[in-house]
Image 1 (cartoon, one colour):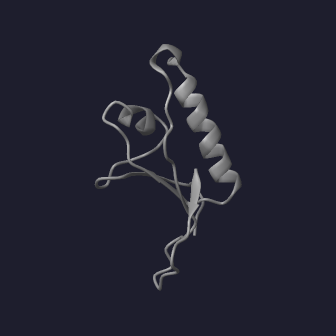
Image 2 (image 1 turned 90 degrees about the horizontal axis):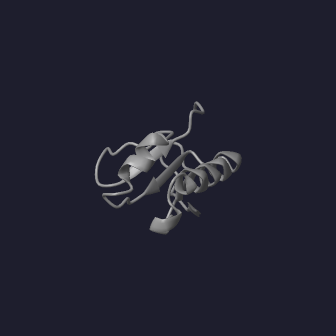
Length: 85
């Protein structure tokens, strides 16, 4: 997980975003490990005030991210925190 520098904007959009890359579990270790890793990464993001996590999933990983609150508004998936502006 890496914090993305974002240019401030005039519309008040939150600007603390992070990019999640390379979350991978070997096939023989699957069965909850990916969810635990993702939970840890998202917990870190929440603790560090991240407003939005973005990632580019593989077709096989999409359901994992959907189960953790990510949506696909376009080509990327994102998860926005529950915090208000």
